[in-house]
Figure 1 (cartoon, rainbow, N blue to C red):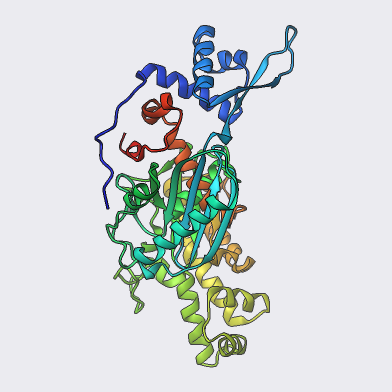
Figure 2: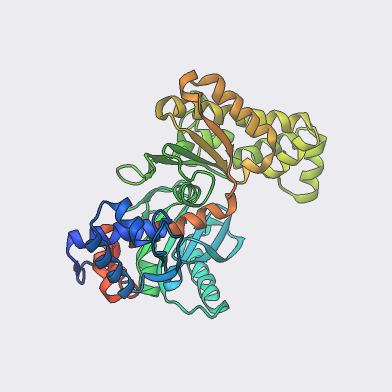
Length: 427
């Protein structure tokens, strides 16, 4: 496959001009200022500059005149409307055991989505063709009038954000160094961004969920694996190489016979994640310690975290014990993070997080018991309201934010579309 190159990258619009365009566009997109007088008051830019930049954005097809706004004593001002229908974004979230794909507009609204079981261990040459098929089905399902502007995709492992390649992902055999971005960019001829799925879940909650307005925020996914997305000062924190928040491989015990998929022992994920709950539940069933789990194992042939959650709901003492232990280990890790990072909000999502109230209650109790009083004084800890849609929503916002960033907008805005410009990821 042909890698993305820098051969055609040019900045067509001068820097200060682009900065002003981004300022005006961001204020209108967010709804912070939607009339010319509001833009003048909010942006700090002069009336003439605002008039010119609004005219530019309208000529580029990004803004349009809207309805009349409320009058403040004189003639009612005309509101401005962000043309979120001008383009579409394809998004995908690859989990350990499922694929979800969707289509968003330029405001990040999920217009359509599909989900199906899949095994990430099947490798990129199996899963990515299926993602491409689902993308094609989404694009063909409706008569979308606007072109495809970009693709965002999340995967369940560390990603080098600059290259869009998974790097030594523990639960993704065959994916190490695979050019996910280049493959999709070559096929669709649009810019593509790839990130860890939990980062995208955090971004989805930050921009379209319960975390809107939060400056210091943690999203914790407890599924087959465990990972965290970190938001600092209102901005997603990826770290130097893109692997910040990989808390599933924090050592929570010094001595353990359980070897994690990363090759170490004592990892949180190996002892408290979904696979760990399934393993411990199976042991309890086969050893005769839980009649509920034994019956579930006989019926289904295998056990998962959801079976432990169902058992806890029925009052099975072994299931309650397993969820309590998992919640305690996760809570102890989070308490360290709370003391170190001092977030105002922690949202918990993922399949295991839906196992029941026992898990969440134990996590909350442990965090508050093990953290400093000042660090927890205003801390909220809750289940993610977006959950299944958080990753897809975040993938859309990732692409939108990159396309409308000052360093990229000037490279494509005069042509009115980033379609046909996969090289934009390198600007």
